[in-house]
Structure formats: C-alpha cells, structure tokens
Length: 628
Image 1 (tube, one colour):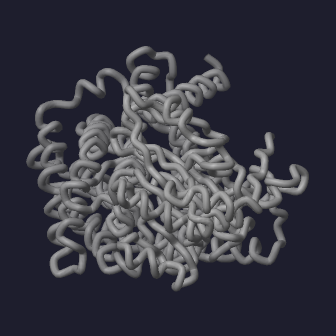
Image 2 (cartoon, helix red, strand yellow):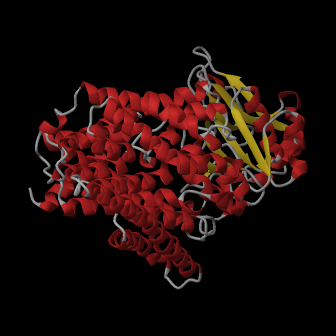
Image 3 (spheres, helix red, strand yellow):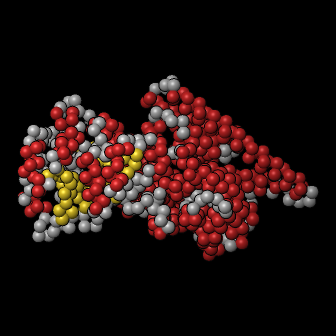
C-alpha cells in the first residue's frame, strides 16, 4: 500500500476501534492495541519499520499534543486539596518506583541490569491517556480523581526523562568498562546525567512555561484572530516540543507539559474552545498511535515473552506499585482509602509504548540482548494493567467509598417554587438531586427538608472545584432569567452531554420564532415546551405541584393518560423513574413513553383543590407549542 492508503487504513481502523470500545464499555486502548497487532504482525496489512527515526519522530510529536491537551486540563485550584500528596507522588514517587521496578525486572524478570534500570525508569509513567477515560467511567469523587489525574500527567514526562538519563548513563559508561577507563567513564556518565537533567529543566521552563505564558498574553490582548488561535497553538506545541528535543534530548514532553499547565491556568476567554479542539485532535492521534506502535512488533518479538516476564508484570502490579505509594505517602494528609486506590491503579499508556519503541532498538544496538524483549514487555504491562485496572476501578472505588455514585439524578439551577416541588419529589423517590442558587433564602426550605443544595454561582471556580456532580445525569436550568439558563446549559453541556442538558421554555421561544435563542446557544427545552418560568410560578401559586403515579401492566401509559384532562392545560409531563430506579427527564425534543413499572412525574393541580386552582389559573392560558 501507498503511504496515503496506509494512513487512511490506520485512521479508519483507529476510530472504528474507539467506537467499538465505547459500545462495549471497555477501555479503548485494549481494542486499539488488539487492532494494531492484527493489522501489523499478524496479518501484515500495515507495515511500520521498527526503529525508524522518521516514525519515532512523528510518534513523539503526536505524544506531545496528547500530553499538552491533558496538561491544559490541570487546574491549580485542585492543589488546595491534594497538593502535598501530589508533590510526594511526583517528586519522591518516580525515583522510588524506578528503583523497585529495576530490582523486580532484574531478579524476577531475569533482565540484565542495564535493561532493567531503563525499564524500571520508563514504567514510572502511569498513562493519563488511559487514566482520564477510566475516571469518567468510574465516577470517582473529585479529590481521588484529581490525585490520579495529576500524577498521571506529571509523571509521564518525568518517567521519560528518567529513562533517557538512565540510558544515556549506561551508553557512556559502557564505552569504558576496562581498567582505569571504568572510573573515568562513570564520572563522565554522572556528569552527563546531571548536566542533561539541569538542561532539561531549564529548557522546559524557558521554552515551555515561558513561551506558553507569552502565547497566553498574545491571545489575551487579541493580537491573533479567533479562528487562528487553535491552529497556532497546535503548531506552537509541535515547534516547542521539537526545539526542546534539539536543545536537550527528550526534554520536549516536559516542555509541552509545563506549557499546557501555564496556559490552562491563565483564565483565557477561549480556554474551553481550545480544549475542545485539542481533545478531538488527541482522540484521532491516540487512535493512530496505538495502532502504529504495536504494528512495529513482529511475531518473534512476541515470542520473547516468557514466564519470568509474566512474573515481573505481576510483581510490578502487586508489589512495586503498592509499596511505592505506601512509602512516599507516609505521614501525608492523603486519606487511607485514596492510598489503597492509588496503590492499585496505575495503568500505562501511549507514552510508555512510544518511548519503548525508541529505547528498545537503542539497547539492542548497544549490545544488550535483552533489549529485544524491552518493547514486548512494555506492551504486556500496558495490556495487563489497562485490563486489570480498567475493569476494577469502578468496583474498588465503590468498596472504598470513593465513588461519586451511580450516574442517576438531576442538578437544578434556580430554586424556584417549581424546582423545590420537583426536588422534594425526586428525593422521596430516592433519585439523587442537587439544587443550586445564588440567593441563600431561596434554598432555606430545601435545606430544612434535607434536600442537598449549593449556595453560590454554579459557573464559579469554587463550584467547578468542589461540587460533586458525577452522580447526576441531567441538568435543568430553571431560573427566571432565560439567558442565564442558556449560558449555564451551554457551559455545562460538555460535562452532562448536550442531550441531557435542559432549560425551561424561554419567553421569546414561546412567542416569536425569529427572535428566540437558537438551539446552538441554549439547552434543549424541558417538558412540553409550553410554560416559561412565569407560567410555572403562577401555577404553583394556584396550587399545582409535582405528582406521581406508578404504571402497571394492567394500568399502563395509555390507560393513565386517558383518565387525565387536556395535556398542556391541566397537566404537564415532567419525567419518569423506571422499575430499576433510573430517572429520565421529559422533553418534547426527546420524546419517550414510560413503560410498565415506571413511576410517572407530572405537574398538575392538587386533586382536592383542582376546581379552585383552575379558576385562579384561568387568566393564564397555556401557550401553544412552537414547532421547529
């Protein structure tokens, strides 16, 4: 195949693997690596020359983009809760993990010392490209999630740098192993390592943090047109990564990581748009890389894996990682449950695979026979840790009480009387609910009823840092300000999913199609789309509230509806809780029919007060639903 055809096959296969993994709800990296092995060494459809400098350079650039995107999502506000733990895990943890890993690689895996030291250093990384998707699936609380996320992103460039320094020391000292040259070569090796380490830090700070801050200032002052900011930032990442590697080998990843952290914490107005662009690009890059890298393997390399290598992987997971976390967190404020979780969860990802593809051939070229098993061993570690940790993270977090809970509930923004009635009903049905409002008095009745509340601005940094919403599946913006509801809906849509982000009907939507907010600038309209905030409030004042009815096989949706008065005038469907306790919010945009066993939630007058309520509400006519 031509280069263009090969690239098309890789991209198509990568995205297909991502879709399959999403449908099967398993870690995508497992399907991607399996796809790479099938396309590469097993079938020979995709051939990638192992050890090629051009391929390695392209892989390095792809990894730089992925790391930068992850680093931009790190917020300094999270450090307030996990700062001391993060510092220990990222400063003390890597050297401890390197030493323990090297000992295991030599004495259990049977690898010669030089290869064992490089392998121990490389496996310090904990794969943010795997950790972050797993965190989304597991619904961890914010503190535990922050610990794993920060450690994964910070330790990736540190692990690569440690492995590079170790390899550099080995190659220098190997040049003089006889007589008096041994002492001289060791001295030169230590001096070279120290010089490289200092140089890498200086380059990362100057190029990464310095230029990152400069780019942020340029963006903030409007010197770059909006449509050029994302492309310019992408090119800047590639340039800084390449330039840093030219100045000090393997310092590019550290530089782009610092660059991402700096830019992510500069409060840029276009931060979310930049993150969205980079996240989409990262998915494509990861899909390609996890196929290209295993495609470089051949069958003979896979056969190098023996029982000792398998034993090493087991020791790495069950001894090295737990012991490392236990040692570096002695006397730290990290909760015991978080230590247990982190002692187990440490999947490796794309950085380990990409670096192994470069260092393995270098070890072989230097004369170390065990270098042939370097890349297969790293792939075995990746596959086993991703499978074991991916399928156990949710279960373990629930057992330790670190899970935010099942994703089933409603976040209501705006403590209106209607919202209060809905929240109280959901709580009685044992559905998670949280009501947020910036006016303390509006929350008083809810707090007295034991309904969870948040006092403050839902879009504030404090809310972003402290509010646990991972267990909530829907967002309903129900304030009396249509445009504020639209703002919150669009801002939170990426977290909840735009198909689960709703706002009550807007006044302009109910009256004039041309003047209403477009769908791209608001949330989906909740319920029947007939009543705005004022109509709902008037009906609550007239005696309306949220009612519930449980459907059965004999008394289903059609039978229940036939007994009701005119829909949209005498009652309004709000949602339903199915027989498994799962809540679903109703919207005419996403119509559904409650099944037998479901509990229907509807807004209607109290039965004992229906006649009086109808009379009091007669001056307010239901506004017809506007199609479109």
